[in-house]
Amino acid sequence: DTAVSQTPKYLVTQMGNDKSIKCEQNLGHDTMYWYKQDSKKFLKIMFSYNNKELIINETVPNRFSPKSPDKAHLNLHINSLELGDSAVYFCASSTRGELFFGEGSRLTVL
Amino acid sequence: DAKTTQPTSMDCAEGRAANLPCNHSTISGNEYVYWYRQIHSQGPQYIIHGLKNNETNEMASLIITEDRKSSTLILPHATLRDTAVYYCIVRVGGSGTYKYIFGTGTRLKVLA
Image (cartoon, rainbow over all chains, first blue to last red):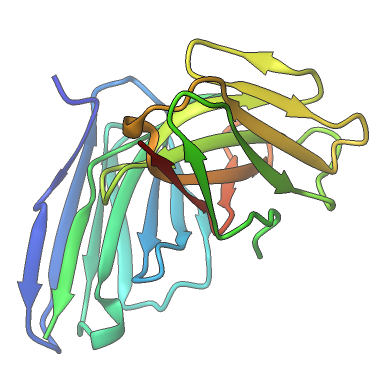
């Protein structure tokens, strides 16, 4: 039973399209995150939510809009996709200690 | 705004101890050091974390210097399956607002 699950695992789309990635955790954690991993494997935090409230927004372009319908879900919607958005996006959750990651969603923008 | 620096890559012979260093000279008093690893492009996996004292679990040991400006992750008997990118992380913020800031990672290759 996967703790942090993301869908889709792979996403290939054209520039200018809008796409969403979904994340769900069944750990009962209060805080969820989105990280972006670029081609150089650098993991950069994008957003965090605590109990559905936005806590961290790391100067991400406003084409990226996270939404947390409840504390078990954190979705990421991306408008007007650009080539530079190609990356692996990781969802994670935590309570007060360890950060649990999903398996990632690889987005390729053509 | 990475708060940690790590060597880009290291090799280790199978069965030997792998010692992975990390510098975090700007760490504040209540900020924890975490270590994660990433095998291929899977989700990063937790290894260990600590604040001041040395820590040990079934996977690894974490040695933190007394001034807390650096730490070393030790895999006591490296196996081929330990080949991965190892990330040293500083956790900043308070409860509910924690931010886990990843370093650039060390690519560890365990050699047969």
